[in-house]
Image (cartoon, rainbow, N blue to C red):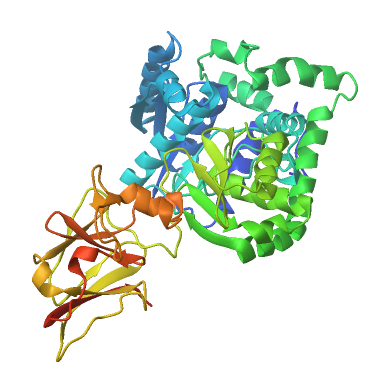
Length: 488
């Protein structure tokens, strides 16, 4: 953004050329394949739709109705008519954002962003689109930088939005592109007037309840009284920080990868002791990077939230927890420091996982594949002479008396009411939950841990212990060997 023009540059031939040049530099973009364009009906998105259409791109206008304003239905119909007039495809999404915010304990702004991006990327995948395109402008960039500055963001926050990025919690293959980040809103307003485009006005943009609105309506004009070119200076700051981060991020990312122990859709886990041993500044930067990977469009997680998360590292108790914002939690569990979105099942790579809501049948002999790269093998063993097999030699192997089993065996997750009589307990049983607690199994591992049943009887907790009722006796003559293995 070093060459960003001042806000009062209205050469729209230059504007069209600027957008065309920007898009020509985006890797993989091809005018033969569709772009899903987020269109609210306002100045910025309406101008973007018109510019892309005139440039020859195959555009689909995508409008999401948040159902937050009485005028929202009129906006949706307006975008549909505009797309039809231009000869563009149109798709519409609807969502109860207020309900989503209440259910997931998000701010209205965060819930609206989440619902909108979910819609855009789901539709992009359905249509085979090459990218999702939004109409964020240079003004939005300035507001974002100030918003992050107020909330105590690090360098990544001061870098602002990027022209091309991947929002991995929505799609790892379809990029988000922002071709207007070097274009001021005033230019787009003039473009709409000159091309007889009549955008809709969103009254909530003047509502001071929202911090971004106060920044735009109150703070920026105040700052402009000190420096009339403050917006250009802040846009330049974002560009400068971007350049500096390209140099610095490599070191943070190297340390991040060194202590990363697990990652998946909606969570990251790290080696707790190694992260705790790092300087506090490095801790915050690693946590910040993980937050950005999980919530790349969040505007609500500030330095105070990162500090709350880092404070968990020095706690002596496990399962200490902190809510950061936007449904993201941090906690410590055993030797792990974990960041996860609400409702996400955290699965460490070293844990075996049984499929949700499904029983797996285990014949003998057979191999059954679990999730997370694990499998359970079953084999027959013949015994000559008297033998008592020592099941304590390997927790990932169990040898059971075949005469005590009902075949085929089944594998499933824990269910309410499940009980277990561990090997060595002569009488009585305990709940599986109590057994998990006694063996100090990590809480997050318990949800998906595979259990092996003979009929309705739990006969083996893989990786821990078989049941007393199926142990090998002196007169046992046919045995079943079960093995839990991580596939190479």
